[in-house]
Amino acid sequence: MKDLYPSRKSQEVSIIPRKDPVIHAEKGQENHSSLSKEQLESYQQNGFLMLENFFSEAEVKQMSNEIYSLADDYKNTETPEVVREPTSDEIRSIFAVHENSSYFDKVAADKRILDIVNHLLGSEVYVNQSRINYKPGFTGKEFYWHSDFETWHVEDGMPRMRAVSVSIALSDNHTYNGPLMLIPGSHQHFISCVGEAPENHYKQSLKMQEFGVPDHDSMRWLANKYGISVPTGPAGSVLLFECNTMHGSNSNITPFGRNNLFMVYNSVKNRLVEPFSGADPRPEFIAARKKLPVLG
Image 1 (cartoon, helix red, strand yellow):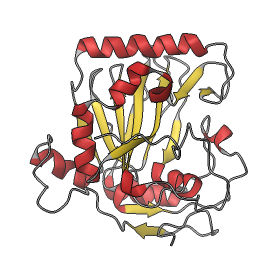
Image 2 (cartoon, rainbow, N blue to C red; image 1 turned 135 degrees about the horizontal axis):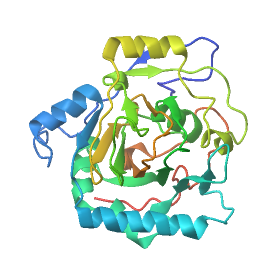
Image 3 (cartoon, rainbow, N blue to C red; image 1 turned 90 degrees about the vertical axis):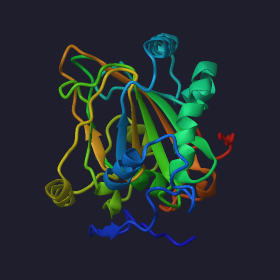
Image 4 (cartoon, helix red, strand yellow; image 1 turned 120 degrees about the vertical axis):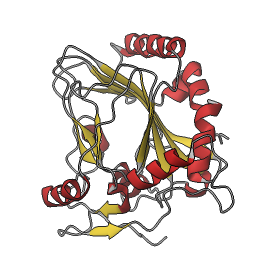
């Protein structure tokens, strides 16, 4: 398969124009969405969309109880699905929660979410990745700037930009407790990266990413051209962002934790192939290849 978005293959950075639609709904289906015309236009233009109060207080409470219950279950367990902070034993992320929790499996198949992602991706979908991100007060570490698609393309073999991330806020997102920052419009440009990642790079990158991150000049160009947005909202809000949207987050040194449930939906027409790096694929709990139950 031709590599339309080469990265980590040269010592020179390149900025490649997007070659894929942002919204993949077929012609004539543009208005068949639970999102309004204005919301679809915002997603098309910016590469992300915040939906406040998507889930009720009762649903948020149940989800929060579940994520803390899972954290307790895995507290003293060594398993690859659990990623800990780079400088402590605190849990940073738990992966594959839709497979390891019957409750989160139901959340992943929530019709309200599927109605949206089916439209954005123009097809049936499956969960390519799911995880809980914990960012506790005082000690929650940053996630450096990156495009998910760059990593998924190079290290997992995702062929095209036809995936969407759904981040469900389980804590109030303020401008000061390490919320996600995104560069609106950045999804229209693929920033290639330099440096071949070492074998089993994922073991380090899930704690602190060093390869597959944009160079400073490209980041300055994007930020100067488009600015930086910091969507905030109460617990229960949902942030949708396109797989190539540049994003990152600061450390959380406030007393106010920030937790979220994160699910990646990929089109069934965009299933993973061999990684474009030529390396071995990352584990199934990071990038689904075998367990692909179709949703919607």
